[in-house]
Length: 216
Image 1 (cartoon, one colour):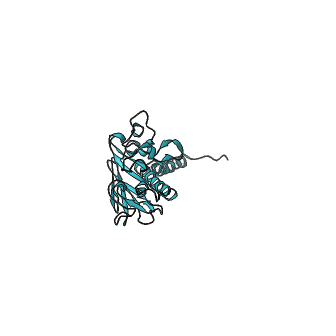
Image 2 (cartoon, rainbow, N blue to C red):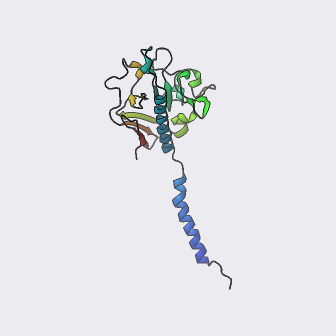
Image 3 (cartoon, rainbow, N blue to C red):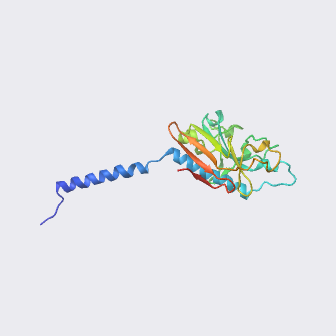
């Protein structure tokens, strides 16, 4: 006798497939806020890596410590008036804290790009300009819908730098008068918060080690 599915069995299979689809498909959808946080976490780690392999100490340069690698966030007309960030070392001139295209880290996956989502400086760092050589993914507003950022806890302002040991430092190094000012090293968890129109997520940078993770 030839066996076949009954109508009830067929309906049951369709229902099971439907339940599985409802359960699985949402989990495969991308979350732009989570993606942005993962990217920023990765780039904070990369900034720390650059600082550790490219020690800026120079006994002949009294401003050597201002040239440490740092990641700086910002929102201005050159980023399209949305949050973006840049990884750079303040090596040009007297290290005033301003970003020049020659100071920005090169994208290790494409040396023709620099690691900036748009910032002040030459036209090559302005995301809306035809000569832009930055990375559009680092423009958090245009790529992920991020509307604001905030640095709090052990850090403030818009910058995180690292010394040659990988220890995180806060603030604009261009205003420092020595390599290690009393409150320069981050002493408690630095919280980098990214927000969309309806939710937010925090990236934690721990003191001393610079270990970075996304807060659950």
